[in-house]
Length: 156
Image 1 (cartoon, helix red, strand yellow):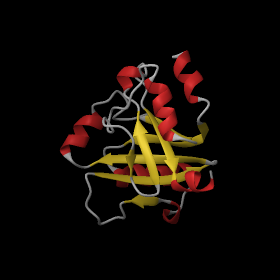
Image 2 (cartoon, helix red, strand yellow):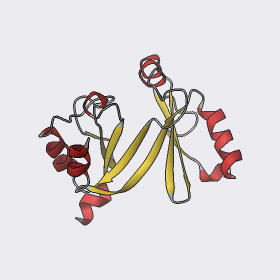
Image 3 (cartoon, helix red, strand yellow):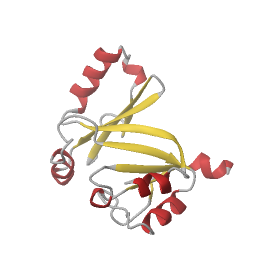
């Protein structure tokens, strides 16, 4: 795994978030609010409550670190995410903000580390950010997400 760190470190800007898969987003957010003393206004939902989607997300920040709670709603996502070793509890993935996602993916590919998991076809653009998950089969089982935000490329 030393090769992964040596390649990826050149592109890492900062941690982006820590992701947790949760079976019930409402209950998980309520627990987080109780544990961390968060107000409901400190939680950001994607999509907003009431909008149907195959996966629902809640984001909040504690101590400068963003947390991402992921509730798979569609059965295909429930099977994929909840059956992972960390699916019921614990950290699901670590996301890194990178300076150049295409260059990072190319450098990793040269070492046999490739996209996979929920982005098997590579980098996807979702508006304000581009993202890719690395295939856990090529990262010794680690689920790693790379993110490049639109403002990173606009300022660079």
